Every structure is written in C-alpha cells, then in structure tokens.
Length: 154
Image (cartoon, rainbow, N blue to C red; front, side, top):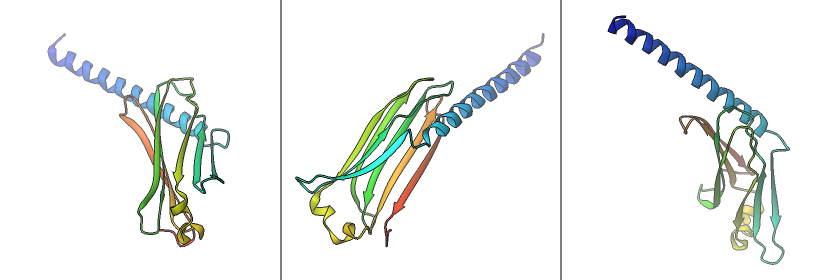
C-alpha cells in the first residue's frame, strides 16, 4: 500500500472517530440537560433570617448524568442592583460520572442592611443564574444565563 493511500485511510478513520466522539458528546449533553430541567432536580427558595434580617437565597440540586460521558456542571447565582452592581454571588462546580448524580446546595446571603434598602424591598434589581454543562474534557459544552428582573429591573 502506498504512503498516500495509507494517509488517506488514516484521515478518513480520524474523521469518522471525530464524528463518533462528537455524537457521544451531544448525546450526553442532551441527556443531562433534559434531566436537569425539572422540578425534581432543582429548587430555589428565599428565607429571611429572623435573627439578623439577612436574605438567604438557596439553590438545592440533584443533577443526574444519564449520558455516556462524564460531565462538569457549573452554577453561579448573583443578585445585582438597578445599576448592575453586584450585591452577592456564589458559584459551584460538580463533576458527574456517567450514570451518577451529585446533589449539592448553593446559597448566597444578602446582608440585612442591603436587603432593607428601598430598592430591594420594592423588588427592583435582578437575579442572575448561570448554568453551564461541559463534557469531553471541557471541549464540548453549553452555557445559559437566566436573568430574573424585578419591577423596574436592570
């Protein structure tokens, strides 16, 4: 077999392998996203600490990986004021193997002196939730930012 023919076969095999890996990656992303977007997987609540007056936003999650490749999920929650200034934020990243789950809780605290401002009491400002899922060594992924604005939000 000539070197040119061998190189051609190698390139074809490499392209087919790349397509197979891309297909597995997309299959994994689709499965993780389809199970992640449900009421059973995520819940968010606001509690007010009666002792201090602080607002505590908590995201409870139990994401599952029903795909065939491992995934890394990243979450970021932030509260911003009308001027877009960051009030509070927190983030978390979890690694989930195929067929596994990784329950976690993520909280942010808005101090009472900021929570009691007229701006936040009137539900002005915004909450940003950033969700990212990546697989294949972070080569393939999807990121979404959800911005929940209050009345007169940013």
